[in-house]
Length: 271
Ligand code: DGL
Image (cartoon, rainbow, N blue to C red):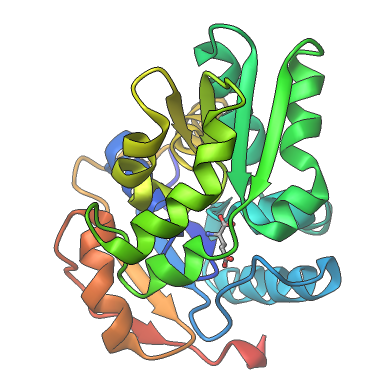
């Protein structure tokens, strides 16, 4: 039994979709969430910059006494996971492998699409994980760089002409390749699930990065006897590197629950 908190981080709000899954799957655990809102989006940045940011994010989270960290960010998971795991002596879970395992369980004809940020697609990490798990799977990858800024600006609802237009332009050619499963490889994208499903149609199963990581973490904590034994709802604490007001406004939509604690600002350059 271990009552220490779990650290969770993303470039901004997207990781809250993973935090939501963690709340559902491990409701008693305390979560400390950091959103690097001053430097979002991460998705177009170089591997070197991403590693620098990710190390700072982890150093900040490790200023708390944590038992594990979830990288609730596809971009950091695809580019920096191995380095962060090698540099830190606590379990660190990314989104790539668990999400790929789920996609392979779901696909009917082994025709899987992946949408993610430019850095994630450039890294080839999702593709490599899918092929490692099943060499026969056919994979189509597509970067959707406009999705994250639109989501961060609240343009994710079905019927919004801006997001609908952008999504159609990205996704119609991908749909026409005949994939039967689509990985939403960036943790911001589950917010676009309805818009994406509307374009891809009912024949294409959507698999979200984030949700499976929560199951992976649960397995890991259980195996290591690290689950909290406390019989109460876990606390959720937020830190961001830019305006807390903007974060709080949208965070409750992402989390689908009211925030019980105000978000706090952190000077990430100090870490
Ligand atoms: N939500 C992140 C991801 O999963 C980062 C997106 C971004 O900042 O560009 O990739």
